[in-house]
Image 1 (cartoon, rainbow, N blue to C red):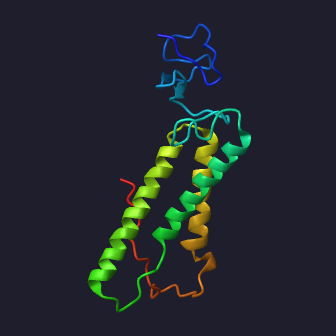
Image 2 (image 1 turned 135 degrees about the horizontal axis):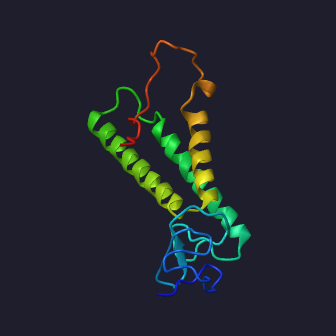
Image 3 (image 1 turned 45 degrees about the vertical axis):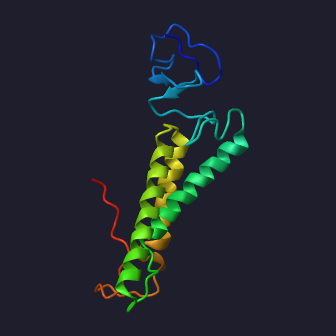
Length: 162
């Protein structure tokens, strides 16, 4: 079985399923190789077929910004306090559930983007989560310097990593 690279050419004498650089690839529906190990470059499909598109550095940068901001939104939702004290418990529970669903959905989208195995996507996802935590979750920008734990906790529990 022949496997085409992102450049449209055939890989050299590498065995099926392995490209010339030793990284594992699998054919997708367009005959292009899907990477199974991390690689660097702008010719990648992130989340959708042909997005950001080949040979388009500007669209690749736009895709990186999109992943970065999605990761920041996940952190904002993880540390937000939207529900007011004394709210109706049913309404608060529905809002909390909707926020949780949105946060989990966006976290999965970021995870799927990282599964493109592009090094740039991994770096911007980690950077987005890190900057989002710095701004929304760390003590660096809190108005109160109360260390005793009397501050209101976020509406949502932390995302589970298990």
